[in-house]
Length: 242
Image (cartoon, rainbow, N blue to C red; front, side):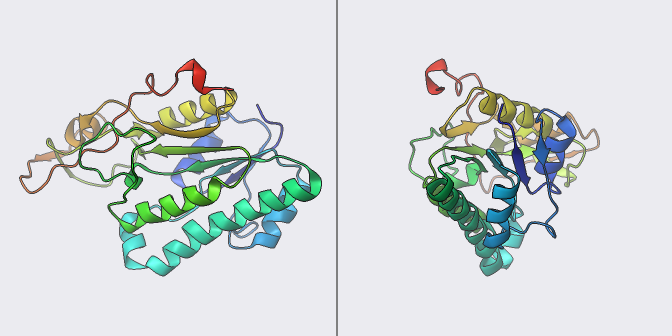
């Protein structure tokens, strides 16, 4: 495992679960007030001062409705913020000859969401603005020497926000604590590149009913969504790791 880790977005759902897991040793998680991804100068200074080897980039606007409502702000944070991180890494690498690995949390929203079982080399086409910001973020991340781009979907079993769910809408989302363990395993195995992390295809109702007993059922005939449905075992062939 890397010696010094920087977690960006530590106050969010994923970030707080990463901290809570205690799987990552020597991890620093400054608040947004202390280290804002829109401030490139502070990012670079923090990376140098703390001799950071690995960045877990979990910061950004993840709410789809918020991204659609304020596209300018979503672009500024999700894309421009990522650009600041990437440029800081590149500059440090050139000046100090130090490689910093970047882990970027992308989304299954980068895929068209019409058939499922998407592979990492499938054509990307976002179905919402949030997905578009992730596609642009991925392009930036690929500029650094070492990176992991994780395309995924996860949920917090303690905070399922809706009261109704459908039997004919599917996704391959993972429970948050499970995803954190998989993420940790990826880093330990020194994986580099792009990877889908998801569970088996299962209906939204069946998935969430397990954790929210008072969840009500509904059936829609208007649409059927199939998110990226890839099993964890399929995603970890030994040849994929350096």
